[in-house]
Length: 150
Image (cartoon, rainbow, N blue to C red; front, side, top):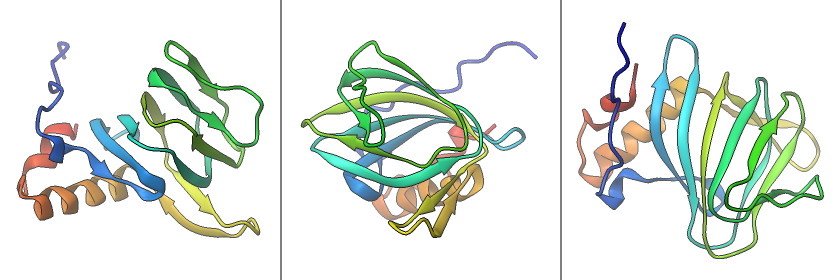
């Protein structure tokens, strides 16, 4: 199969899907066969993506602003590349007004409360559903999410 241009960066701000903790999620690719998710994360104000654990590696490239994991002493800034090994509970923190990062990950993640109890989970299929619901509700339509699915 030849390489393909999957999609261009949408100009419509409704394409960004609100996420818990004050962030927004812009899907670039949902690979339903392998479970790979490629997305942009954006925070336009300080926020926190609660405690979670990925079962597979996460690759992140910081485009704008800064972010960190509460459990570590580093700060990712524009140009920083983060390789996250699987199996560690961590908390993504954005302390400044703006952050944009490009993330590639697979297999989903578990969400934990402050007592290390699993309180939720997300994967490629559940995130497709979250995005589909948002696109329907905001007026982009029932087929909008399909452009990201492979």
